[in-house]
Image (tube, rainbow, N blue to C red; front, side, top):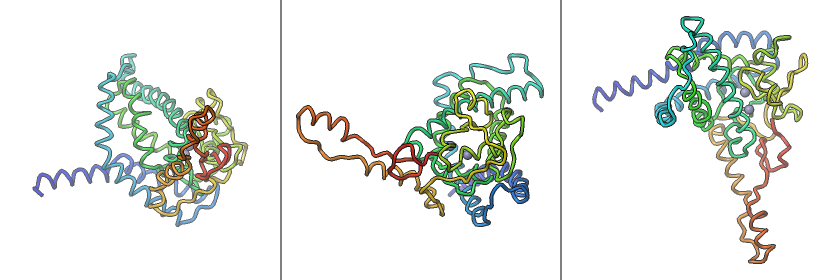
Amino acid sequence: MAFSELELVWNHVCRIVLSDNVLMTVLIVPVLFMAERFWSARRVSADHYCFGLSFFAVNSVVLGILAPTINYWTAIGVQAFGYGLIDLRSFGLNGLTGSFVALFVSTFVLDFFYYWFHRVLHSNRILWQTHLLHHSDENMNMLTAQRGHIFEGLMAPFFITFPMAVLFQLPAIEIAILALLPQAYHFVSHANIRLSYGPLWWLIISPDYHRIHHSIEPKHRDKNFTNWFPIWDILFGTLYRPKPCERPVTGVNGTSVKSLWQAYKLPVCGWRRMLKSVDLRVPRPATQSGRLERMGHAIDVAPITRNGMNASLSDGNN
Ligand SMILES: [Zn+2]
Ligand SMILES: [Zn+2]
C-alpha cells in the first residue's frame, strides 16, 4: 500500500474516532453517569453498562465506515429535488441570535420528520424489526440512546436528513451543531434518572416522558414518539403524560439481547420468522373459493409483534 493510501486510511480512522458522535459521548457520558448513580430511576448493573459501551463502540466504527456512502446518496437525492428551499438567514436572522433561532426552527421541523419516521417504524412490521433493538433494553439508561440498529441508521437520511436538506438552507455551523445537539439530548432523554420537568413538561421531553415510550406496559404502547418537543405527541394524539413517580419497567416481552452478535442479527431473525410464517402452500385450484383463498389466506402473514413472537398484533407493543 502506497504512503498516500495509508494516509487516506489513517485520516478516515481519525474521522471515525473523532466524530461528533464520539466526542459528544466522551463529554456527556461521565456527567450523566454520575447523575444515574445518585438519582437512578431503576438499578442498572455494571455489566449492562459494559454491553452498552461495547455496542456503541462497534456501531460507531460501522456507521463511520458507511457514512461516506450514506452522505453521497443523500447528496444525490437532495440535488435531484433542489437544495435549501428556505434560507432562514434571509429573514434577517443573522449573528448569534439568528443562529439560535435557525437552530431552534430547524430542530423543531426535524423533530416533526423524526416523529413520523418513528411512527412508521412502530406501525410497519418489517421496519419494526430494525427498531426492536432500541426498545429491547430492559435496563434503559443513557447508553440506550446509542442502541440503534445499523439498518435503522441507514433509513434515517431518507426520512429525516433528505427532507431537511431540501427544505432548509443552513450555514455549515448550524449543520454541525445540529448534528451534535440532537445526539446530546438523546443521552439525556434516555438517562436512568428521576427527572420530569414539572409544569414545563410540555416544553421538551424529560427522561420520565421518554421512559413511557420504552415501557413494557400495554397502556403505554405507541405513546410519546417525539424526540424533543411534546407538541407533536399532543397534536397527533400520542401523548401519555407520566404521573408523578411513574417510571415503568422497559423492554420488549420475549426479546432479550445479551451479545453484540444477537444485537446485529436481531432484525434478520425477525424477518426470517416472518418469512417462515408466510403460507406458501399452493391453494386448491381454480374455483372461486380457491382464488379467494390464494388472495387472502395464502398471503396472510401471521402477525409478528414487537416482542418478536407470533401473536396478536395488539400484544407486546411498546
Ligand atoms: Zn420507538
Ligand atoms: Zn428511545
